[in-house]
Image 1 (cartoon, rainbow, N blue to C red):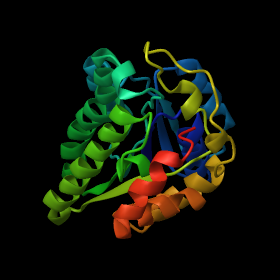
Image 2: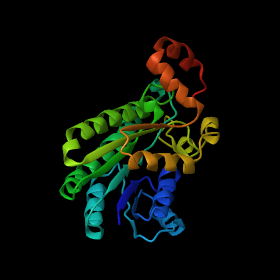
Image 3: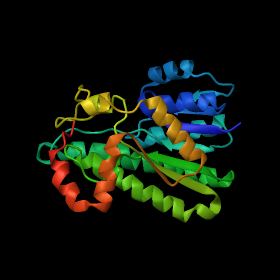
Image 4: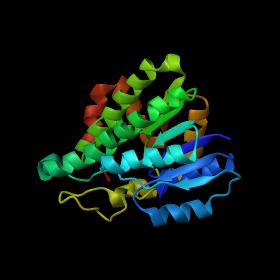
Length: 259
């Protein structure tokens, strides 16, 4: 029986992924900071496999180290690691203190990289697997009110593409997931200029794709070892405009409601 490790599994896309893989009969390792929320998710999953709750804080390297040690005690192999944990922002550059910039990168980039670097050798030793990262459509182009969030998501795209190139001959595959507007609490949990959650749901998020549909698309992309997958609705058109009609992108992007 295969094992999938999902970070950010206490809500949103991570929770939906837990349900998706539980129905596929996987063993689950569920991680996030909120252990009680993870327990609720675990109880809601229907699976013939085992479910392990391993709390971790991507901003705390010690908890990441402890989490990997705990995982090794419970399972012999990780077939899929989905780096889904992260945090967003809703603030202009001049309003955002450096402490908030650094916190976003610590969680979205450095914590994700730290966990991956500890799982990678183990995965290689046990025959390989898939290491995925949930970036963002904002990881493909800049967007207002998301400066450090967008930058951190650009960073993981570059990192995981490199990982896939370096270890392809050791049966390591990477999938970079770039969601658009998905119906989660990411905007409510996004940091405002004082580093606290905004507590407000963006209209774009409210009207976005359901997490269930998103999780299914992620699962199918990973099963096919797709190197990259863009997931969303009409907002994905901005990616193609940016790529093929950059002059038009610069005209219309500043006029789009960033919320």
